[in-house]
Image 1: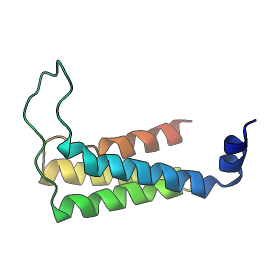
Image 2 (image 1 turned 60 degrees about the horizontal axis):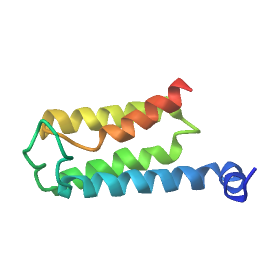
Image 3 (image 1 turned 30 degrees about the vertical axis):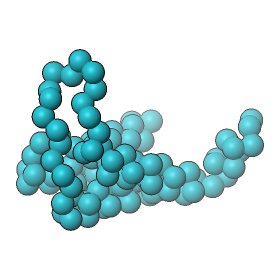
Image 4 (image 1 turned 90 degrees about the vertical axis):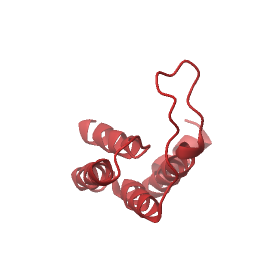
Length: 107
């Protein structure tokens, strides 16, 4: 077992915090990214609003507790993504948080 793996397994909240920060960073940086080559869609994502940033904070912040309360984290992330889809519509990177929560509950 490597040193990093042993450290992350001994501190699950630290590992989940790193995961949540990475997902939050990807959520904030995704609207500025160009579409991938060969993509069927070419419309850029709209700029982030304060609502988007606050919702991303809640969804990604819930991921810190995914090992302790996986079902509650799944509920928060899916509700946050649904709220974004209903109010703002369009594409979002918030579904990544929901996917991680679903994987946690499934495993």
